[in-house]
Image (cartoon, rainbow, N blue to C red; front, side, top):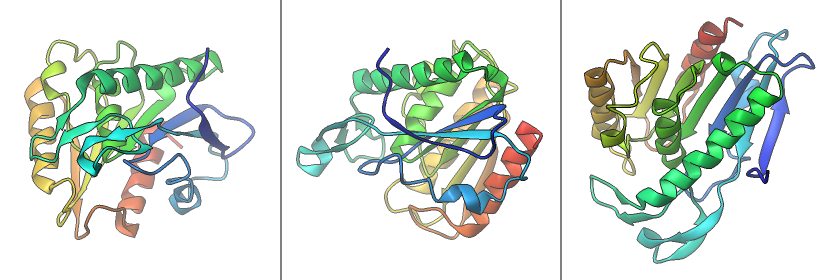
Length: 220
């Protein structure tokens, strides 16, 4: 099988957990690579970080410019009109990476899905439609693009979910983070929601909170 190209970093030789982390629009798998040492995970923690590269496609809201993207964004409205077929394709390719981790000996319950912005929208879809139990979902500065698709497929309502958002985000307004939380709660999830005085980026306080959450859900 042809998998998405990925940056992979293992924190020790004895890997027993994986974090599949999706970048945002126009970035690549190297984008969140520098965050690993900032997480300051225990030295004995055996975590494989997998940072896939999105394919390069034309993006309508950017004048059709070709760039790394998980799906096309057709309109920059508050509701974010997207190419739904493309998000399904990307979700399928991330599911392939989940299966590869399982094939490499990582239990699905030890696999975390994470994503920033557009990557977070794909991570949301993969995690919330999964038929396998996962360790957790980390959604950063993102939105629930396929919220109408999760009501009948929520099979793991105990899934730990951490949603982080900047209060002054001009790209993905914080209101969209609130909407995602409300939708998750309606379905039956119990997500954690944290906000920070930042724009469309990641801050030090957020990294500390992410690290604490990862240690807790993976029992590191």
